[in-house]
Structures are given as structure tokens and as C-alpha cells.
Length: 229
Image (tube, rainbow, N blue to C red; front, top):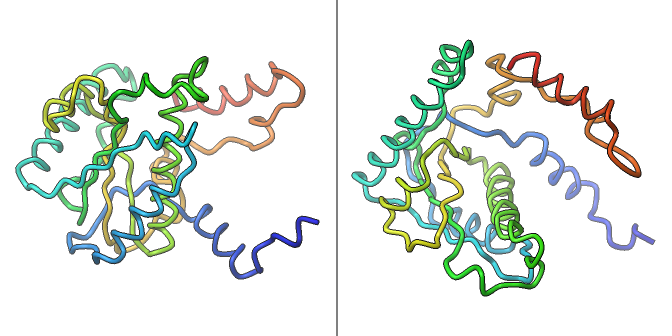
């Protein structure tokens, strides 16, 4: 019976609380995160599942202020380029806060490892599973951070080649995210993009199909985005 392996009610409530109250944060306080909390977050990342147990994530803690400023500039540059192709939503997009690199207490760059082609287990037909594995590690950090009362934002608005140059990455290393971690005054009561009117979370029923592709559900899910696109 599954009950034999269930967490107790308090533990289960904690897991779901972290899942449902996790937020992609952009507003931070600047004080440092305690070393013991950093170690917990790193361990959470390193405990993530990965295809073939390849653990493709590499985490670089960015502590040099000049490097932080350069990463901030790369994100700002891409923000402007993204706005330029947003059409009628350009001005609205420019009002969104998309990063907190210079405000947060800790900045991590998460990258996919070098020599990934050597790892075939689970990737022969789906090589992108290395990225999926790294995303699991990032999600682990997000949930652990929320449990510790630490905010986290995953920044993906950047030119990867620019970040590779700044970070002195080998040619086959790929950055997948800049993580902003830090203390916050409050967690958003709903996702920031919903709070700002940019988008809304869709109806769960439209994202779950049975025994094949459901054209009607797919259309409804797309329409949810099209309302604001």
C-alpha cells in the first residue's frame, strides 16, 4: 500500500506549500545569505534526478561585482532587443522587472557541462534530456529556497554567447540560467506576470490529455496565451 511510504501530514503540507507558494522573484534585499543555507541549496540542486545520472549541471557562484555588473548589462541588452520584437506589447514588456542581479545577495550561473556527447544513456534519441535534468536541479533550488524563506528568480533573458564569453566557458558549455537568490520583503501572492497583467495561468483541464493529442484542449490552452499576446 502507498500509505506505507507516505510522508506524515505535516511533511506533505510542507512539500505542497513550497510548490504552490514558490515564486519567480525579482525584488530582493541585498544582505548575504547564510553559508549554511547556501550549502543546503547547493545540496538540493545536486540531489536532483538526471538522465543516466550524468548530473549535467554546473553551478558558478558569481561574487565579483564587476562580473555581476557585466551580466546585468547583458540582460539589459537582451531586454531591449526582446522589446523591439514584441510589437504592440513592447511598452508593456519594458515595464516588467526581469532581473535582480545587482540587488540580490547571491548570483549563480547554471550551465550544461562540457563533453556532454559522451553521455548516451537516455540521450541517444532525446539529447535535450541534459537540459531537462538541469531544469530539475534548478527547480530543486527554487523549492528549497522557498522553504528556507529565500527568494529566487530564474533569468533567461540573455544572449548565451555573451554569457559564455563573460564566464570564460569552453565552447561546448551552455548557460541555461542566471539565478538571483536573496532575502525578500515579501513573496508575491501570485506569479508576478499574472499580478502585472501580462498573462494568466491556464485551466489545468486544458493541459491534460488522454490517449493522444486533443485538438480542442490544445486550442483552448493556446487561446489562454493569445488573450494577451
